Image 1 (tube, rainbow, N blue to C red):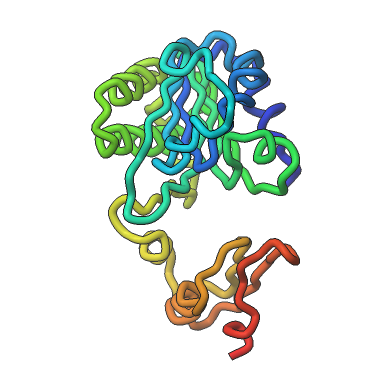
Image 2: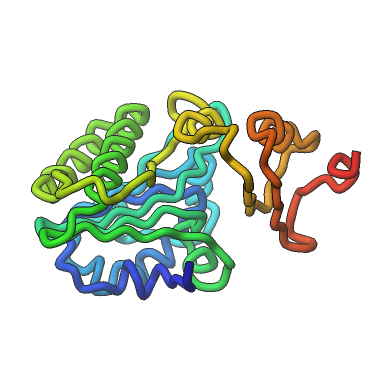
Length: 249
């Protein structure tokens, strides 16, 4: 684990990227247009698709910023869910190279520069397709999102993204090991985690999150499904919804 800067390690890379797709909850269009679109990694992208929560989409008119490139250089597609669309996924691709970032950072100035976020960056190239399966799964997830949004334009953009990096999708080997791309479109993340692990062999869980439910039901589920694990929780003082009284009881 090391310090990652998404701007330096993703958006500022001159990789000749032709297409991109982003998933975010908060979406700062002014930051996108005034800064990110001018960085080397974005300069050649003529197809940029952004998926965000419907509440974020509806708030664009309240910011006082009039976007110049919305639905021209980039497409923003809102998603309706029973809860909140909270995915953070960034994919930049060309025929020879693809970059993927998965983590907690929103597409905003704070998320990219000042907040303490967690991100994992994968690179897939003609010379190294170790993480080609992660790319394949990410593209499949994006295509599912485009279908759920009922936006044909979004679907066509994701299909274009797939076609741009199609030659990178065949893995050279299975050296990615037990790294898995998980999402909750079909079932909960906890069930997904259990499906790819042996709960009886898990000895330690580390949970880093600012958000918790009032009764700590999710934490109770972790304790129940991983009975032999020591569970460590990391929170930021005065910035977390961790219910201390529920934790003590």
